Length: 599
Ligand code: ADP
Image 1 (spheres, rainbow, N blue to C red):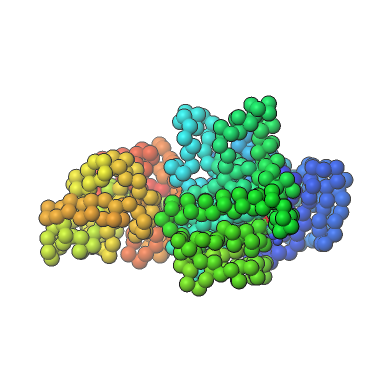
Image 2 (cartoon, rainbow, N blue to C red):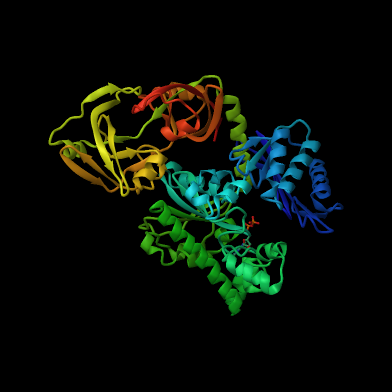
């Protein structure tokens, strides 16, 4: 499929025509200094001054110039759209309604979304009747949990104005995280990664088992790391004080922190890291300090994100600085031994990733945490995501409905734990079979004892497994006083513990409490029919009576043992107004669901 990718920024536009089948780049061009009197078209090694200024004039002119030289067929046009707000998390086919929503979200990204929208309208006019797809830079961060995305301000204001962390550079973070998993020859769903995107804009993301769970940019791209011209984190008190002392308006302050700060402000040289590194080498103290503040901030976030994920398997550097500056990588990675990350200084100093060799491993062989520098390719990522959307949209069978079962809190135990709680050689006894073949609700129940409260008569499900796991809902978490992560069953590493009380003893688990990730069990035959694979994430529309509700990020679990069924917990059932009737361990409801999108 030939996809024309448009990456329109506030001062430049990058376009590439990519064949997504063989991942070949067929042609590219860019327009720089878009808003100056003389925008420049860069194409096939030549620079041409464009007549028109701004995206409205310069972009159509550039496309016409390109079209007169390149005659490849375009099948789909894919746009990077910076902000998807609380509406768009996944690549989306553009129609009038979608354009209207992107425009409404412009209040959250006034410098970016209007330009992106203009780009969409221009290509729509020039290439009529070619499907267009939007890929959102905030999309990858949709999985950041509430505890990480909320700011501690009055709740009514948060809700009224949609104030929260959205996170940016998601296309790049997602792309390099997947590249790292491919390089390490394992599924991204087995890895805890920290990705550092260090370009003109900079951010760090914690990618836990394939999902973004924290990122350093916030409601706007201003928060977090020191960037080319952005300050990153700053005490609002300091900003308010400065505004008062200098008599600056809010928009002047925004301009100061977004355009005059960061590396540019600290060094007094400019925003280009190459110039700052050179000046530092020549003895410029301000340049040296800029590099130190920049590197320190990245290291601080790496430590924080390792703590949040309870460990890290690989740290990845990307973007112009992350790919090209051994010095910055060295400054960030030195003395990370305590984390298990040991840099190989020689490899780091002498190498950088390239388009031909896009992954550089620069940790010691015995380093438990791998250090990688990966060549990012946002345009390729956008093209591949758009390709996947078009193909999967054709494939997903939207007709077949999926029965929904509500899973109440329950416990899985090892035989050893059963014996500690019920006595030596004790075997669980079956109360009734569950809908998933071979599984049963046991007669035995336990008391869960949390730091704050206890819950009695929690059902054990059999047969025994080779790990202990307690699955509870958000409401249970608060009642018990436990902060459990949302995980797929079996992923209990670094989850909190709990005390189990049985008739013959008490066992304190050091880990094992999770809030189960809503999921769909299916047999391989169903997976084939739905066009999905094990551990895919999908969106699902749940129908219950009159009401229908969309659940995003629903995990697909495929096994020969499974029967088609969606499992949600009691809180989610309440949200979808699915009438429970009674509270069993896992009970079927009258509601059903349809698969509407694959991530
Ligand atoms: P953008 O975020 O605009 O896509 P890039 O990812 O291209 O930007 O990164 C631009 C940054 O990368 C600039 O600050 C530039 O100085 C820096 N950079 C590029 N090459 C080098 C290098 N060899 N050493 C240090 N920094 C570099």
